[in-house]
Length: 402
Image (cartoon, rainbow, N blue to C red; front, side):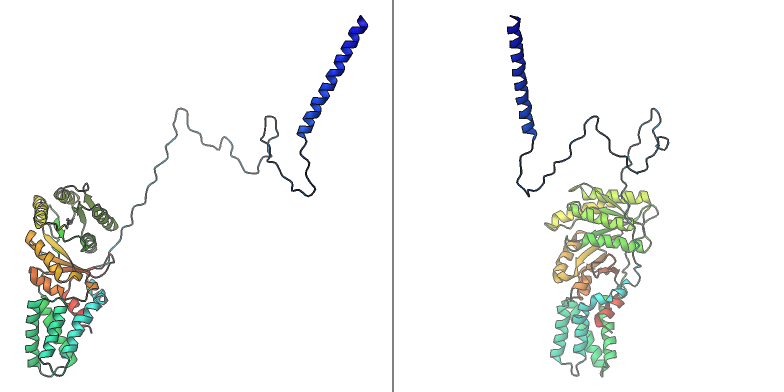
């Protein structure tokens, strides 16, 4: 019996050994990589992730601070928050002096010079000035937008002086034409922009005009003119119907250090104008420039709006200037706009923009005759300092050339 039991145990042990061998062999077969043909590329497996007990990497040569060298917060203290990024303040520009600016910009009037001044000199230099020549002189003046009545006056005076003069040298003709054009433009007009306010209030200048004439840009350039002449300025963005107008005006102000008072889009323009003057009083500014809306949908709406702005501003003090901005390239069409604004508010001066881009320099004469107020400023380019005080002598000299 014992022999039988011993034989069974031995058999079981043998069977277990055979099974264990088969399992181990199978595992080894699975771990072996598949056979590859000769010349096959070698595929490199990615490095295995480190496990607990693996060797650490060799230390780098980078210098490390000791704990004594590291500043730690005191007990109970809190880490200071990061300071917000501070945007650099815009650089304040120093505009060039306005004195003699029109003389420096004389070359910009070359187009007007070719049509008006040189055209007249060529006609008057003819040996015989017959009726046909005088008609050409008249046509030249009308083409340059001088206007019908001023043209007739100038031609009559020229005919009389040429008849008395008799022989005409080029120098005499130039002097004759210069004197007559100056007389037509009006050399004795007061062309200064009134910027002398009261003892406790700044001077107030309203800028009016149709959108598209460069009104807001002109307001910004006028701020530069005043700053160049030593005045401190506050800007009022009362054209609240165009958000771009307020942004544009503020940009102009920042460039010369002038504060811009603005209100909500589509807000009350009179309220913005009132706040601008109030701010000017608080700051002790010399001048407050108010840029107004230039919509011409209906004359009634324009009249109500501009009239209200002026009445509200006058609660602080009088409005010293109302400048009408006109685009010189529109010619006689600009006179229609001028008439509408003249009926709405009392215009005290004219700003002619884009005078360098037109061959119709005679618009200076026509608009003065139409409104009975002088041209005080002219725009002769897109540069920041291309707005110049109007000087009749320099203008006429640019028209007739050397």
